[in-house]
Image (tube, rainbow, N blue to C red):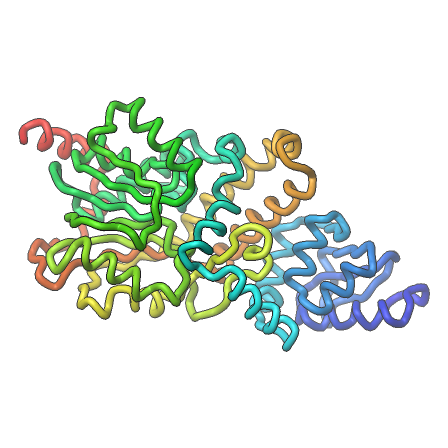
Length: 416
């Protein structure tokens, strides 16, 4: 029970917040040392709420109220942040739909952040154009901001990102001289890697001005400007044909209402004989994306269930050739990112402020937790047109040594 010093109104709100966490072993405190205790379990962590505004916000919309309060510094954690988040995820508090107020708030957020052509540009600018210098502080040197692939848990982040790019190239069986379209190319690492190591030509699309500029400079420095074209444009405007269509980490920004249009773009790019790969954050069942992350970090984001994502491909009779879940690889990737972010927190605070640091710490820690507990998945889906004949007999080609694969591709390119 709360201490006698806690006013009745605040006590009721604390009890409501506690009830929403189920059996999570967390003690909630409002400006005193006792607060309310979890049902049936001894608390292992404490959430101290320091002002009434934050307390009311948490009672109305626990996820957003908690996230905003933590970022603002009006919520303090007594214990380990990731352990606390894991307990909230396991209790269901981080995933429930909640009451009428939260559902109405969610619908308003959906409308405000809709991924129209104009809306997508605003959403992407909000996240990716924070300056390249910020991302250089905690990503790998090539600024790869998608799930890495760890051949072993002890691999470095740099080696794992290299392995991920080779894994993608093997999955779509790139051959020298082929044409590739990449939708949502980030800072250009994969497009440059495909051109440099697999002898293909790439047209890569992105609507982030800072990312495109960085990618063009990298391609020029690598002497690949004649092989890689970085185009600042929306995926809906992709034109021309190709042998392979690749999208790594873009589907989360498309919105399920636009899947039919994305499928049409893919089909007019590869027709019935090409192939492609979609790499995206997903879920086990359809469910709204984190309300707080959409508000503060990733506006317009949506992680589809696999069944939803396949609606992109099914209307065009594409054949699904391979589906893989790299969920634990993303958890490992986020461990590296969070560690590097914490090491650079002082520099990040100088760039922005302390509230920004806390918000991004919570975003990275929450994402890490979601992949650990299984609330989020990372899917790679390989598909091909209905008339494509070159289908691998086994999956052995996916797990060959990356160095051997790249050397063979370079040799074929040199001889062609």
